[in-house]
Length: 539
Image (cartoon, rainbow, N blue to C red):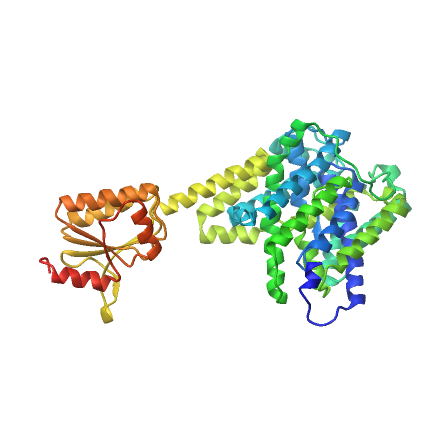
């Protein structure tokens, strides 16, 4: 228990921690069932995820607040990834592949831990993450709307399916719509009026009671049906070798999203409560929790930002609530699973719909539109790509667009000519006389090497006889940049123009020497370069 070994300020309040654990179970039971359905898995698989995997993570993590659990993005990813490799939801092989997916994710997490590769999650930029999660939410909402309406669709692609849903609204089952809409209304009302209460559980119990009392299950309202009783038992997934390999790309996508979301969430609460978070420990905890998931007929677990926030709101300062939740859910599946058979699917769909609507961060999309349009369009491409092209394809396309956008911006770096200002400092302004101080504010690499050569050559064309490169902002130079620097210096030398470098860091000088650029003249400051110019024949 690294979160306990790290020490806490003051003793734990056991009544508060246990109460928080019961609250967490009240949130986890309906949501885990709903997320299992989204993933195309039996409801009990979602409940199993709240037993051994949650307990393993609670014992091994360093965060005191982070809750490990299936969440909407992971559930949607599991479904889209397994369907993409040809698995059929509802079949025994589909469930076996889901268990195997958890084990492959565990291997990826543990490799990230072993090689300290958590930083790779940083390559998922915020626009990609915002658009990706919003796209998953749109995909999930579409599936839940069908359950609330009590209709079935035959279209396989997103937009045809959406159109089919719209055209079938007149055929919606009235009582199913009432149950689903009422469940959503109760959750939203309790969230505003009594946020401390477990709204999803209260709404689900109420909906189940009404359906049973009014006999709505005999009038066409779909219910969950039989849920096997008993605790999970050790089980090795029955999956062919080639299928294991096919799960690797999906596992990388799931792990990347979990790291980007989970580590940021954990870090935020660690800073808020003034304790040290060990990111590598979190990676190991996620890895071993998913080992437990894959071996106990569970689904892949990641981080749940909503349940983490709920635990923080209760005042919990440890992972004890996760352990209590695991015990409560274990008792439920061992002795009371029969009561779950009467849960209305429309109510479960309403619970999930309310949960995932919050994943569509319209405010952040509007902010991206205002701050940087290119990143807004990357987010939109990812948002639409998830339901239309599939989650993995959408992430790859959005990642490539992000990389292109970075290179595009880097290819047009901020540059300026400098002139003497007050107190001998150099400020932005047109070059004066035959001396030109040129500042290049970026790494010098293949994408901007031509810009570098063209702008310095232009200064020589305009009459500069001494050109000083202010290299303070140049942190790196690749081989193309080094070739451009060598070519530029040679061209200027042939034209009788003196070329020098100022304010280069020691590491940059060593790098240029490594590239064989040993004939350059270096000055520690622009003032020193200007003084040398004045002492020369040009001065």
